Picture (cartoon, helix red, strand yellow):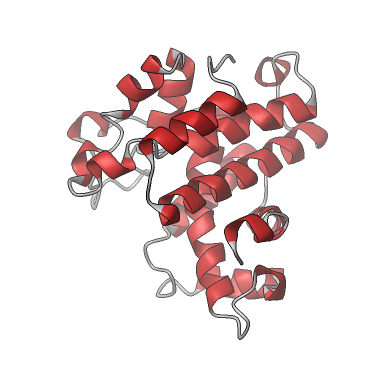
Length: 216
């Protein structure tokens, strides 16, 4: 697994292509959860040796984090026509030195779920399916950020520190709350070896640890 882009370069690419502060925060949050998931899977022996790629837990976590940080790199170019989301990303990342592996992994988070009925993405992604722990993790992690942030904003002090795992579970089950956070996508965590409630907790802790950086 080679990305072709290190963390410093990823930050540069982010700053050049994403100006909206809310989108930047979402990408930072996605990085944090991806790093936490990588560490969890590595340290609980849920990754194959091929997935580890000879890397330490910290090294792998940084790579998964970079993927999370860059996953919406073309959003500002496509947000007014979401059917193009993911189509401008390859050129941006290739110009920055990104590998085909990085591009394919990021593209996968836009693929439809098993239920394609309400899919709004690019037609060329219809019929494609996410494969492997990393692709499922990216889709689940970036979707979970929205549920966690929405829950924090419901707290009296609007702080992540006030969110308890059991509160997050209740919000997850209430599908009218943060309805755009697709529960089916979040539940893909079980495809990469983390039970749902444990995944919600892992994600919550990850964002609580960067609360000062995201202002919550």
